[in-house]
Length: 500
Image (cartoon, rainbow, N blue to C red; front, side):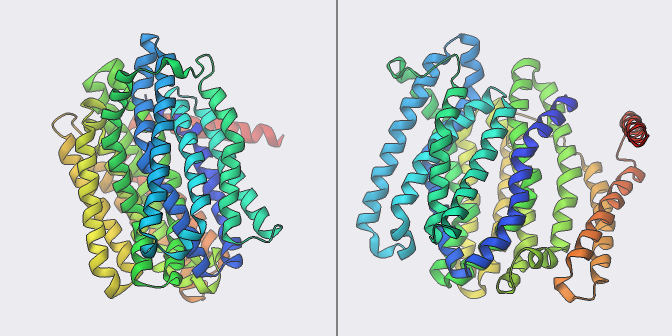
C-alpha cells in the first residue's frame, strides 16, 4: 500500500512541482512588471473567479470522484456522465446570471477594479468550471498521467499566454486574465475527449434521480469549499476594505510564494489520499483503511513539517530572492501561511471518516463554515487595527480550528491513530535542521535579507542534517532501513557504472 501511495505521489508530483517551480520564475517578472497596487487588483480578480468556481462546481467534482467507481461497477457510466454534464451546465448558467444581477444591484459596494474586469472574470469562471469537473473524472479513473499533463498545460498555457499579452501585446492585468481564459478554452475539447473516452456525452440519458444524488452529496461540499475560499482568500477583500491596494499586493505576493511552495508537498497528499482511502475502504474494509490513514499521516509529517519549519526560518531571504525591495516587508507573514497550509493538509487527512466512511458531507461543510467564520470574524476585528499580518495570523487560527473540528467529527467512524512518536522525532530533527539553516544564512552578513548563495547553501546542508536526525532518532524501522540501504547501494552501483 505504501508503495502504491508513493507511486501515485510521484506521478502527481510534476503537476505540483513544476507550477511551484514556475512561481520562482514568474514572481520576479510580475513584481517587476506591476507595482503592489496593480498586483492587488490581479489577486482580487483571480480570487473572485475562484470563489465562483467553488460555489458552482466544486461539489460536483467531489461527487464525480466519489460516485464514478460505483457507476463503473454498475455499468452506468454513460448515464452518470450525461447527468454530470447537464447538471454542470445548469449550475454554471445559474451562477453566471446571479453574478451579473449582483453586479447590477450592488455596484456601489464592489471595488472598481472588479467591475472593470468582471466580463473576463465570468469567462474564466465558466472555462475553469468545466475543466474542473472533467479533471475530476480523470482523477476518479486514476489517470494520474493525463491529469498531470492537463494540469501543467493549463497552468503553463495560462501563464505563457498572459505574459505574452502583457509584454508583447502591451496589456496590463487584463492580459494575464485573458491568458487564463484562452488556455482553458483551447485545452478543454481534448480534456473532455479523454475523460469520456469510450463513454461519450449523451445529454438525453440525463437522470433526475442521479442528479439528486450528486446534489445531495455535493452541495454541502460546495458550501464547505466556499467556506474554504473564505479561509484562503477572503483576506484580500477584507484587507482591501480597510487598507490600501498596496497592502493587498504585499500580502498576495508573500502569500503566493509561501503557499505555492509548501502546497507543492501538501497538495500531493490531497491528490493521492482521496482515491487511495476510497479504494481501500471499498475493497479491504475498516481495519485496512485505518492502517492506511496512519501510514499517510506518518509520511505527511516526515515530509511536510520540516518544509514548513525551513520556509519559516528562511522567509526573509526567500522573499528577497524572488521580489523587488517594494515587496520585502511582506515576508513577515510567510511562517503563518506555511503552517496554515500544513494544518490544512492534516485536517484533510482527519476528515476521511466523515467524507469516505459515512459520507457525512454536511458535517464537513459545517466544520468548514465554523472555521471560516472564526477566521473572518478575527480579521474583521484585527485587520483594521494591525494590518495585513493580522489576516495571516487569523488564517492559521482558522485552519487550526478546522483541524480540531474534523478530528472530532471523524473519530466515531474512523479511528485516526496519530503517530505521535513520529511527530516527536520530526520536531527534534526539524529543530536541528532549522538551526543549521539559520546559522548558515547568518554567515552571509547581509542581515535578514541574506543572499542567494547562502540561502541555497543553507538548504543543501539542512536537508541531509534533517534526514540524518530522523535516521538517528530511530524513525525508520529495521525493514525500512534495510530497503533504504538497498536502494542506496543500487544507486551507488549505477552511478559507478555510469562513470566507467
